[in-house]
Image (cartoon, rainbow, N blue to C red; front, top):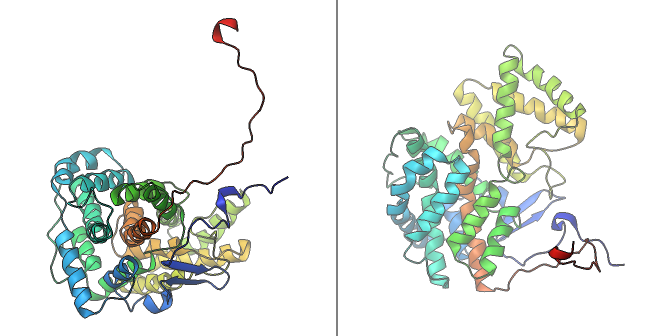
Length: 380
């Protein structure tokens, strides 16, 4: 008898890619051969998006040209603008992202072409638009409008400007930019696989990205960072005098009930997620700047307890939660913010799939009945 199929396609190679790679045992992540520890804090998100989408690090002229594309692509479009109030008033954040990206696709000048040059242009526009869509949705649901971008600021700084109405500090912008770099791609995760399956039918890039966003919306893929922040907030509210001590009790109680602690463990990494290393440090720095390190101290205590009790390390979502919190990003926008950074990777995967395409059509194992005889309805 043939071996049983791998549940969830675990350890099954579904595609060849030159975009990113993981060594789960060593805790290493590469983008196109560059270690994430080299890129974090050194390369800007625009440089990393260019690297993923166009295959090599940009030179000064290439980066200037790409930044000009990003600036030109930072528009909502007529359909998005017309529908935004209704979307913001009736849809949750990830539902809204799914709708708004689809609407944006209708107005893209390259929407009917999967040619390499058209895909390259669409990738830059989608990367430019996503932060604006998140910020515009947030403004619209509060009855306002997003403030204009500052030409001299990058994607990260402009997003924080859109959210706050005032420019962030240089260090805040740098930290958020590093967050975008850390989340830009991560091999064949669920949303990336969904994008490639869609692209493999020769559907267009916007459709593939909508498939990815719909997949990220599911709580088993996206949303862990939101749940981390909600857990910390709940614990703090029930024990304001000793929130770090309450973490100890709450985590052990939840584990005893068989509950999962969000933000820990990973399907691939068997040691610390290399992205968590940077996010932990940035969370501590922002906590100190904020003058209230309660959530950071709670996070560190939770990290210690979960490691002692379950042997699990924090993943990228765990410290991202407090970093985003200290940057003033609303908790229910944490997953849409993830989509902003992952847009660089999703679009790069669509480009790669279209460049060397074969329809993705896995087999399945039939486990139903056989040999049944159909009885017409009038004879039953």
